[in-house]
Image (tube, rainbow, N blue to C red):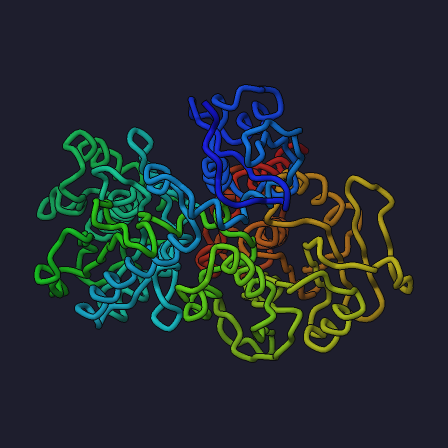
Length: 593
């Protein structure tokens, strides 16, 4: 029996065959099998190949063999195609059988699923209009339109998986406390991809409640002994959490509290100053709750922390003729989005274009790539002029269509931030940009791989000849520029830091903070590698008890001290979140000597 034939062609003379599937192998193993097997019945369908690719990320550029028949069913020679040809062929989608359509996830499915969930979020926000919407990074920001997004936080589900409960000292989110005080509560948005009984992601059901419990414990403790009047009422979990989990988490709260207090960045007195006598009480909201049941819970005893899951457990009525509903459709967007530059901000800035029902899957891919390149957008740059307040982005703005920066002041000498480029930038353009906007710094360190033609600017330029760990030091004016080809998007570069730290701090010796020099450190996301260099500067030169005071004597650096310095940075740059590998490189630099 011949395999079914799709009524369209990828090339003018070939009609690809939809081949039957007999197993659920990974996409890569299926590609491998397709190059070796000859029996069509052992292969995945083209639709299933495309589905698998949509699950594991962009695979364009990897050729594979395609077994085809002509219109008369005659086996033709194998033809080599690019995976991109397969992924971008809309006719294949229209020929999927009903079963495959249930699992196949198109970009259009995701866009309309997000919008459906946003309707629920907006309904909740309308009922609780006095409270700001906070997105739990990274998924939550896709469910809040830009004009309604008040701020973001970062609570990870992995911090509260069963038997792995933890309180992260790298994701303290203490910036939320001032918002809670000012607004009398907050609404935190996240979603889950679960299609079973799990109505909340672990970030909402456990990680944030643990965070609230630890702060409640500190607030209502007396010399670390919990007030008997509060008893167990400082830990609030949804009913879906078992007694086994509740009991185990409850027993861990004193330990988590001790870890946080050891950083010396929060105290019972400080929490009383911010929160008064009120508890932080999580309130759980999801699709199955009637909107009539949602009420304002602010009182003399409670600051409500509304935890809203945007997605719902799908049912048979969630599929329409336009799209199939996907729970948690925005999650891990780098795996399904055709452009790594596409973000929730771009999504909401251009939602009217993206939700056009006339757009095919191919059209959406092209549109997303177009929007991601910034062809439609002016980019705003924030820069440092007369900074009077610590920990806040600078208000002064300059328009530059190619470069965008946003910075935060750690102390008078160390400033960290984010630099973004629409595309590769000529060194000459960057140099002019820096001279115009960053004259007040003695040293600017930029971590990026996007600067080109540095070698053509020989005046004052020192190039490292080590091909494995290159760098460029430009000393043309009062401001020195050090360019390191490191990218926060490349995990391997976190390990490379252990080789660059000695180059920057020991060999070059270009940082003289003790003479009041100012250092600006910029990387591509403002969260990881640049934070690492700022952290090294703090540890080498400033007191752990007061990062604004220069330290005279040398101190022994250990992991706990690194955590203490990092916590103070996070208190200022609340999105700072260096990878574990980055922190390991910092520990290696100080503790391997």
